[in-house]
Image (tube, rainbow, N blue to C red; front, side, top):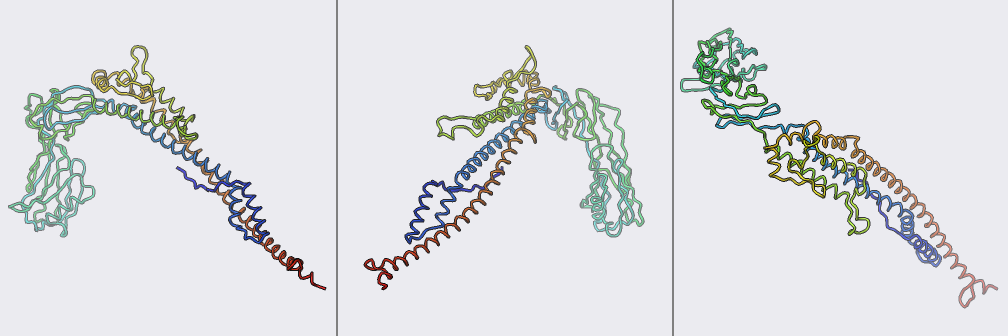
Length: 507
């Protein structure tokens, strides 16, 4: 918001100033001292008082309107934010997804279909873990290179005298650029130190392979590991999942597999399925299932349903934002005859921009979507338009509409020509750069700048006028003082004691 400094001045009656000036001149002629500064200030203030007050009044009006437009813009932005989630269909297309027991949770997005499914979890996805044979923690294992791969990604690290203890090897693996997804740590047990390698990714395809090319070998080559996948058993559970799932196995002389890498194996509605991760996104369209170990060995009912709670919250937030706009707009355009003259109207009373916005939004809110007997409006879902223009929600009716008449709700707020969509389009136009609100703000700021420029010019004029008047009245005061001195001299010369001046006795 633009703020402009105001030049203030006292309002002075010009006739009174002229009288004061005349009196000062007379007083000067009678040997009184004339207060030139006070006289000049009074005259100058009287001359510029009208313009000064006009600028101040205009400035106050512009700033008041600028604040009002900013307030209006703020409530419109809040309304658009509330309408957006209903306009794009995401909120009304939201679903919840959850299992009936432990270890099975979920979420759903656009494309999900409400329904309940029987889900049996045979095993969850795990990441392969390898443990080396025992070494002394200070033992130097030799020198050379280690080629480490996971799936199709690999890296090579150099092992030399600076990093060939277990701790150095672990650090080199963890800090290497291009690490394919392997973490390394040293575990110190009662039997000594072990290098533990773990795949960062779950699944049977993410086994670890280590190829050592030793230049000197004091145990370095024992870290060689070749991983492969052991096929699942042909025997299956009643839901079609294998009794023994496919998993990683290794060939190594110095390492053991302490955790096999496996895919999650489960069934949905009697159909066997598998996933390399425990975040399953492919089993049901638009649905994500999350598996944990608590779900292993259980059969649960996995239910997908409309998220009526979040939908109701979004609709009620929209109603609140709309009512906030109505309340604010009414205040800004109100007229109160009980107030003193000049303070009876709101800052935007009679404003064409505000009237356009109010009219457009009100007509959109009152619209019905569809035609004939299939037409729906806000009242169809329990939201009634009040005489003052606000909306009132019947909580029970809205809840029933969301749970029992979701088609009407979806139609009313459809993402093509629904109420929220049309409203969002209008609000975007109003709030856009170059829109009617931006244009009004720009115009008000330009007017305030113009007032500031004129105030600067008036201040310069006032300064110059003060200088000129000071010079004139100072000269006048000097002249009057000289006249008074000359008058005294003439009196002494021609009109002395007993009406006999100095020249009267001059024979």
